[in-house]
Length: 340
Image (cartoon, rainbow, N blue to C red; front, side, top):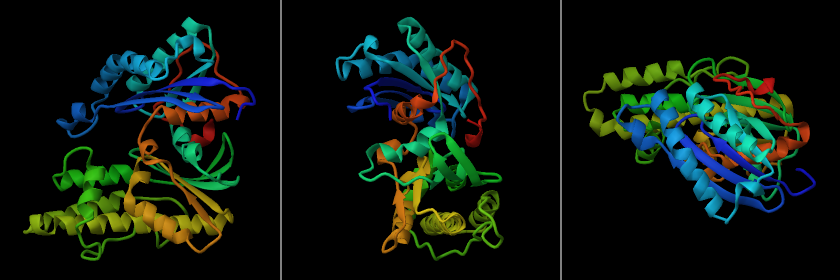
C-alpha cells in the first residue's frame, strides 16, 4: 500500500455493470456505486455489446454524481483516477476509459489502466481479517474466465491452468438457458439446484482423468444438453439435472485445486470472480481446508460480481509500480493476466 494517504476514483465498464468507486489507501472505502444492466439485456437472453456501451455512457455521469454525494466529496479530492482497460467488451471498455481519462485530464491528475481480472483476484484482500501469504494460489471463475494462477507478488502472476473452451460461468449460463431459465442463468441454476438431488445423474468430470491444471467444460455442457433432450418429464426432474450439473462443476474445480496445492506447495487459495458467489463452491472449498493448515479466501458477496471498488483497490496496490499517465485510450478485449 502507498505510505501516504491517496484517494482513488475508479470506473468499471467491462461488460454489463456500470460502476464507480472511491477508495482511500488509509480510510478505506469511501463510495461504491453499481448499476446493473441485467433488465436491459434479459429480453435478449444475453449481453448485447452495443446496448451495453450506450447504457454505460448514460449511467456513468449519474453514478459519478452519486459517488461524490455519498461523502460530500469533489473531484478535486481525487488524487488518482483508474479504469478497467480489459479484458471485456471493446465498446464498453472504451466508454469507461474515455470517461476516466477525461476526468483525469480535467483535474490534471494521473490515471491508471487496471486489468479486470487482477481486480477480481485482489478483491478478497480488501476486507480479509487475515491476508494470504505470498506466494499463493488464485482460482478466478467468472462469466468469461476460468484460471488457476500462482500469485508471486502484486503484478507478478503465472497462469498454471485455464479453460480450453467455455468458462465456468459461461457453462452455467448456457446450461441454464437450455433449461429455460432466465438470464443471467448461472444464479438461477444454482438456486434451482438447491432443491435437487446432485446424485441423480452421473455426469463426466472433464479433464480429471489426465494430468494438468487446465479445464474444459464444453463437453459437460453437451452431455447435459443431451440429458435434457432425452427427458420426457423434464419439469419433474429439472432441479435434479441442475443439482447434478452444479455438483459436477464443483467436483471438477476441487480436483484441480487439490492438484494445484500439491504441485505448488502453497498454503493459501484465493477465490474470485462472479462464480465465487456460488454457495456450493464456497462450502466445498471451505470444508476442504477445515482441520488443515491451508486457508481459503473469498471476496465479500457484493464484490464477487463486477464492481469499481475492486479496480480502485487494485490501483492502490499497483500504484507503487508506476502509472499510465497519458491521454492515449488503450483498451484490450483480450488481455492475458500474465502479460501485465
